[in-house]
Image 1 (cartoon, rainbow, N blue to C red):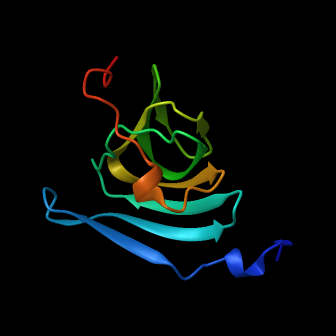
Image 2: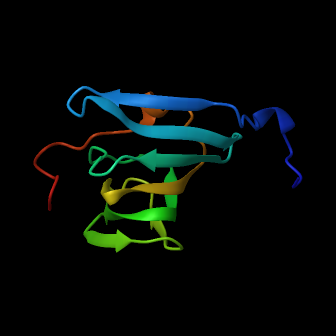
Image 3: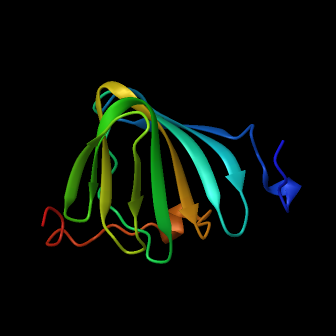
Length: 132
């Protein structure tokens, strides 16, 4: 096992299943792999067609590493179809959205610095700037 400065920060048993009433079933699964003050890494699994809302993190960058499936990553002005092995990055304050492909999508996401209070830190942009 690699060295981790704060061993208490690792929480490999945290699994969160989110439900979206419009989809009628589990839309995605999030498994937290690492959480420290400077970095949080989660593995995410999206059902086919699941999409995040366009959002941004005002004080943190976020990387995405595709493990399985495919999906669209809309990051700022870029709209990329990513496949296993692809690595993408959204800089702090850049609006981004992820849309799972027809077979679903599994990827790692890392936020630095850690915004473990995701509900407080994630910002949804004004409707006038979405889709620019």
